[in-house]
Image (cartoon, rainbow, N blue to C red; front, side, top):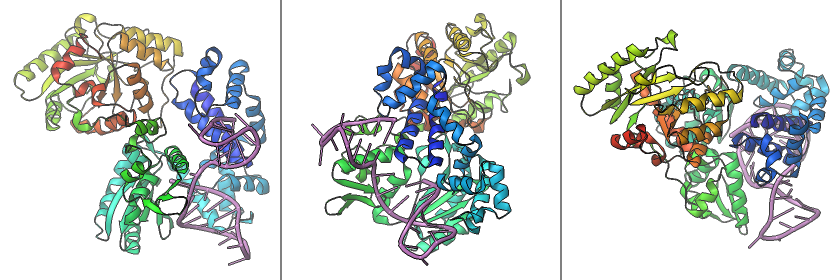
Length: 577
DNA sequence: GCCGTTTTCGGCCCGACTGTTTTCAGTCG
């Protein structure tokens, strides 16, 4: 049983309890447990049997949770979970994801109209039957119809790159308005989460009305969800929501802190404030006894007043950053300017769009010192993967190009397929000719976890393998990772001096943030690569960097921040950490 | 359900917007 299965159970129980209108703190506990389970780096089901204290020691996991997990592991189901599921039709749960409709009204609609599915809800709203429910009028009916449409279109979330690209023209449009003095994006975009629910934009202005009216004149606007004195919400392309908040200059820092979140981070921050006789809100930091405001103009000030080092937005997830800020031991996070090269990209030799020379020029334009050309091997015949002979020809071509290229060193590489039982798709004789060998799984995704783990570990034992590419195989919002024991694979990588890739391709981000942190803690080295299939894609590095920062990585953890000579010792396996 | 340097019981973050219920509940972030 995987952690995410257990997490899903707790999430579902929280959803049902919410619709039933039960104790909100109990619901919060369940959601927190689900969150914790998602983030753990060990298998909960086996741990609860073998080492229960380890689980019980985690803050947020108490007796009740231990009992429920134990029950599921022992008999395959949890009695309370089963009982709750029998009370509410499963089809009602997605209704909670609709914007503007919450558990209370869902419950009420169920009570009065027996509506339990998205389709029924939509039909009732269309037929103007929803307005017969107390507390719901014509307007709310319309809101619900819009919410259903948005839900269907977007399923609620967007990839980081999609949100950044859709938001960029809106931000440029706002920057053109002279009445807007300051402008920042907050929320999950600022924290660089891998998926984004909406774009939070904060501005200060002497003329709020003017700023809001300008926002409402944005040509890309699709619908206006609401507009008040301080907050206005619209949807733009593909149903992505953007919120504009108009703020006072003197509380801008407090507001930026508040709206950047995460919610979990802010809850802990406020509890901390409360213990110190302070109160933190989006308007500033206040003393509780005389309600005197003592700060909030800048974000740094908010943290300093709580005796904390300023915390970078990417770390604000309540994953230990507050304790580290208290001790003054936050990591010095990696920056894009630390990167000296890119070790994974494709060319016209296989499925890339640009030649080796064009890719090299693109790397040069970014100021890189080195670049690895890593086309596919022959197992991927549909993309024109290279066989042994073609690889050797490719190597000679790169040798020649190196002789007449200045300022950037081209490393000879291949992305070699890991075949069904862990063999590689090219002979060791050929691999020995290369500077960089990347191994990756592109087939047989659905084999059982134990076999997949063994398969990958076996590939890592090949003495020529340098990098394990996109280790989990997931595609954001499209495909779950394949099943395997992450920690075993990381351990095998470390033992064999293999580097783990953080693939920056925007729908991969694989390793993801929590995996990066685990890899670092275990002592693995990371390479942040773009897997570019065209020169223009080298810019995807920014998404890898964002994920690395969320994974607490520093420049020293990432091999492609090293000068070429040092990188070479690692590629030759003469050194590792 | 979780937790404890005020507590093993009684708390658990804070404020704005919307629509409709004429005084406020529901929802969101």
